[in-house]
Length: 404
Image (cartoon, rainbow, N blue to C red):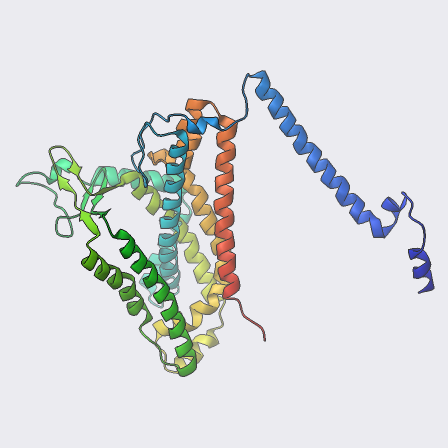
């Protein structure tokens, strides 16, 4: 103790920064930080000098210039007179759309196929294995091109729906047409009072969350399970439909066949369909293996104990096995969601106007702002990846085991 106190009273000298263990780690970290900042400073200075030598400046003013090109699939109003910034926003929304649809569909397919791989039925288990091995061992780019070719070559042209001797017919009461250009579907048109319907729909979502929480607490207290799925489904649709019936704010524009093409309604472009299902089927094969591994990590005694209590196999899977397996499934599932979102940049091969095709394609080529466009795209993919990771990590922590 006396030696330690004497050592702490020793006056500070510069040599302590290297030889004294109390200061050495701090010194090394400061030197490393200075080296990293110097390196990045050199990169920035070198980039600015090279841009100046080429007669270029670093700015984002090009986003306010006229784009001058059309985009077939848009979620917001857009024309070729819109700005490059507007075109980039359209591309960002298209990327978010295909990422959301792909993640949801891939999760459904992956969970379904992962459970089927463990089926006691030999044929079903082998068919699920064939799906998994076939899709995950072929590059996703080839699946995108293959689905695009299937849609283009197998579905009828709009002209096939015309006349009494038409070789194709519309579906769902002549409201949906599947063609080699895409799917023509009814599209909602919002009139006065749509805010009321939107408010009712938001309240319905809140009611679903509260009801599911109540049903879970009731089951924990009494053991009695409520039909959560059907009640949630009714709350999702019926209140908004009833509000619209009273207000009459939302109408459906149904596509109709004109001289050469369908008019009205909405077009889900074939490039979106091909990209969506290719990414979902490809990623779903990996999710299926994650789900299978998570389920097999749960002790068989859990299933046997639940069966001894009289639970049916589907209830055992939904109430006993999957809730425990989620703690194993969620971490690798995050990586699959991130991979699907980044793989959506392959949309350019089928002509889908995502952010890579708009901001990183046509806009970059027209304006010559390669650095600015690349930085904006990198920032977008970084933000969306961090958002997905944060959301899934929050969900993972919410279902983690809580120690007393």
